[in-house]
Image (cartoon, rainbow, N blue to C red):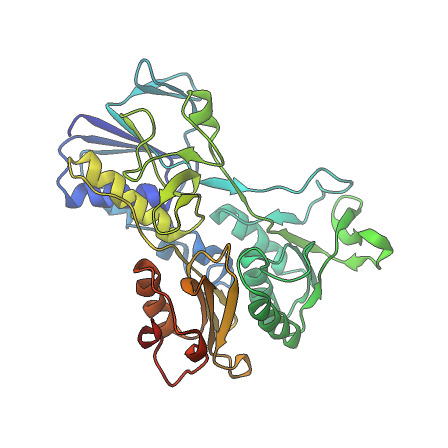
Length: 407
């Protein structure tokens, strides 16, 4: 396929789409349209090394700026797409300009989930973390802050807590659930991370809600629900999840259901429109259902799949999902999807700070969390892809490699 290809969105997935098109010698024109003023960059380091000041901004780029200078790529940054005109096969920009396409790839990504409106929620010093600009604003406040309160104990919240604790701030994490990372890990893994954070001086307030933020022009505290004592805070970072950017697709009449619905080739119901990344709901044959994944791995693999199909290949997306989180010197690597597990077995001793948690459904391995145990993680990906059942009575035996424990 040739002609003009427009990519709506300029995140990690968009950068990979262009890289794959280049590798496959796509003959048409490519137009990249992004709302941020930045070329495609990696978001995972934002809450880790970049926030800690250990990674320069130029290292965030998916590809160096010179990569986009090569024709036939046109880059339009700081540009908002207001609507899709499927009849005219064009995207309509904020200034009313129409950009026609022969093929459109929606790489719209996601945005932070915001707290519900409550007293004080618009005070200075309350931040969300999703973009380079967000991190730079947080870093400016780090310099003068003593008491950091984090709302949410998922990946982002705990990664920020780890960075801030290492920088010497007094850190409090407020979470409405009764354990950390409850949506993604088993209780045993939550308990390990709770111990680790508390050992670093982090104050974890679980099963706790917020009534309001205190302060005149700038936040100076958080008032908790249930009559609990207020928490001092001269800086707040909120990490309570993300929301897929589906509005453009929905307004254009494309099917949307917790994501832009695509097939295993990343095509929408419109044969000239593909969608990739956080914004998509796609079929996963390994788990027998449609899923929406919030991960770099999914963004990159869907980008490669869509670009290959645009170039005339017949490529299907069928990958084992995987994720990671860096907190202190702990690398958590997750393979598969643990929802629906009926048994979770630990391999190794958490006190040794290197172990894994195997999730099973009817003795079949469906997911694994590896903490500083990369070999288990790598072997689990293949076992999950192959749909292996496991020798339940031997999974705790770390002297035997995981790959040798399939039934």
